Length: 142
Image (cartoon, rainbow, N blue to C red; front, top):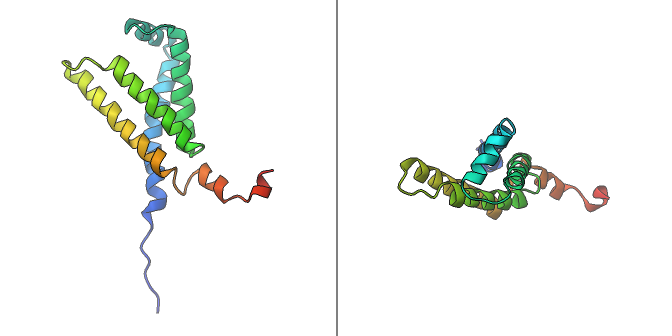
């Protein structure tokens, strides 16, 4: 007798979630590459010091962290960095609560942070470099 097995969504769902979260950061970082002066002026306009350093940090976190999240490589570390970055962006750039657009951006950032904290709590999932590394015997890593 043959039994029907139901597909296991637990393998694909974390991957889809990571893709959806990572794309936001990667695209945002790449867009900053196209207008470095404008991005630095925006950073300076909100009163943050060292706009060049802030610009470089944003690129590293958004593109680097986004790619790490996408691939599932050191996923928890990447998700923590992206979560801190996202909360900082909300606090420094979307704090005009009276402006409905800014309030929506603030809430979006908090929702993204919630998703990232889920990744921190539950890991990258089956389809990730982290999972592949965990399955590799220690003697093959040397």
